[in-house]
Amino acid sequence: MLGLLATTTSAAVALSLPEVAQADDFVTLPSGIKVLTIREGEGATPQPGDTVSVHWAGFTKGYQGKRARECGGKRIDNTSVRDEPYEFKLGSGQAIKAFEIAVSNMKAGGIVRVEVPGELPDLAYPLDRNQRFTGELISPDLKIYKYRYGPQPYELGGQRALDFVLDNATLRPFNRTLLFDIKLLAVRKARS
Image 1 (tube, rainbow, N blue to C red):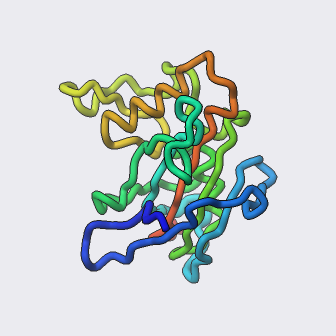
Image 2: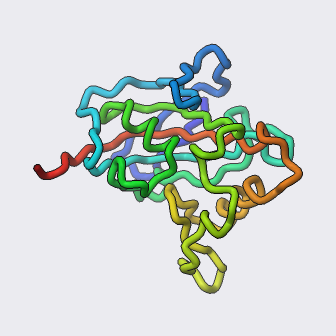
């Protein structure tokens, strides 16, 4: 079993996701993203305007035409390793559309695997670098630029892997497919 969202803190519960998810295990949502529910949550379902906190692990599915790991290709990031959840306001445009759609269909405590087909670039990160980045450097030494839409790869290797897939005009769309494992940690309701 893969512990993609396994944390390094002793208080955290390591997650075990299926090593290989079969195509028919996923449910295709009307948007076109594919979702595999690993664990149904029991908490609140977020609504537009609510702030959500998630752990996520992201992968490029067809990185250099290889499936380096059974779950996907090159790892982009894994927030649970650093125990630094990603927070965003649902419906605000802070996160890529596929992430917003997936989280809006979850309940707190739930875990899903999301496949964002490369044929649906409007649901993922923009292919145009001018639309993808804000121009602001997060780390001038490493030349890590801030993404306009989250989730943001934390390390240079993750950003480069993602940028390679998005920037490479020779790749077929299916090679731009992204995988995300998402655990919805908390939902803070919007103030009325």
